[in-house]
Length: 332
Image (cartoon, rainbow, N blue to C red; front, side, top):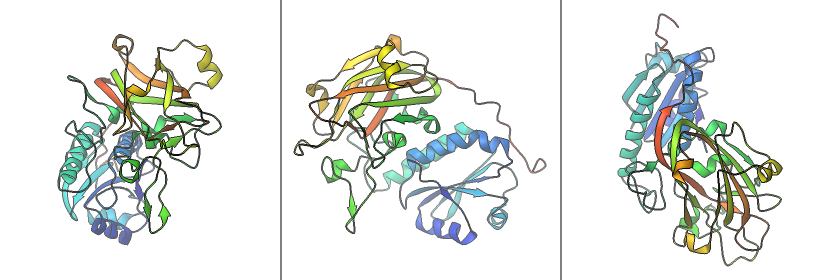
């Protein structure tokens, strides 16, 4: 989920620069139209790439934090300034989503290669954790998920949210043991997985920022086999494409699915807790959204669990969010 920091003072910003190796600062204003239009892209990057003390995304309202804006000579909105070890390494003026994405991801990858935690069992060249090798000719396109439009029904509020499923970090249960959250100073962290609430069904709506060709979904479910009351791995999935919004459970039962999949124990890799769900590729061309309906779990139980979901395929045409225009100092 997003870890974006809203800057409330100049001193807070200076502390942040000292505590985080990379800081991606978004200088914006409430009245700025292009700022609002590029905000989903920035929020997506924050959700995917934020790392404690390593990569931090910070929003600076220039009307409220004039001292910070003046110090860094911000004269156009939006302006994105990227700091590394307290020094400015890149400045992007105007709403340029492609340049912002490319620059931030490059620096993020460099930061990860410097040494700390690894992100998974395999890598496709970016910083996102993947549990298994990608099929030849396809890439991880999870970064095209529009996290602001995600919807998840029947989720237990004590666990993670829909955004948790698309975090690029390695699931904590791979380090601590299946079914367990990290513990620091005898205090458990928030569970970085999703569980169903009243029964074993989940309904997940996934909108995309581009039209995709979807080859497969990688589902990670790190359940504990030692705990009799532990949540289950998903078994039956009904997948719907190009829906405008999430489906109700009764509605999803009645509508014909684009594809129905029944997972068996053999589909799951026991080391990573991940199943590769291959889709009928011809049915998943020009996909702008998916609805994943988890109908039931594997075994007898009342809950199902999902830790991560990766989307594998090809990126097609970008969805047009409206014309983005640079705001210069004469328009401010």
